[in-house]
Length: 169
Image (cartoon, rainbow, N blue to C red; front, side):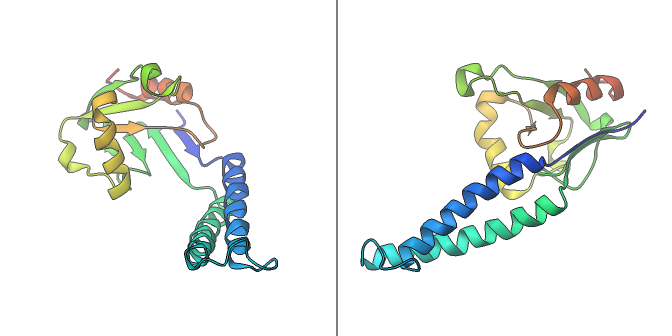
């Protein structure tokens, strides 16, 4: 059986890049690159530089990802590897339960796969991802929420792969 693999979607990355370019151009406008700035306030100048530097960094990262979309999720016979959470594959023996919480009352129809782990401390998340997971735990429960927004695969495909490979349902 072939592993389920989800990569970053180039369409999603292109739309992110479009928004980043808009913020970059807005920053340049605030700096007066296209003529005199709309306001000569020092705060506008500082915000302009912040917009240019931040969007420039984000643009660089997004272009790199666009040229070589990274693997976001891999589900196979050895377990689940969710790149946003960790570089480690979580073996099936550590996953006690998998759910898809009903989040309609929180966020519309968004679907999230939630993993419950036997020993969550063995698989700590990355800083921002772990922080967001902890903040969302009251709504979703579990230890690791997996979202496939911005990837080339669907939640339904991931669920099918989990059912195919996992001794846990």
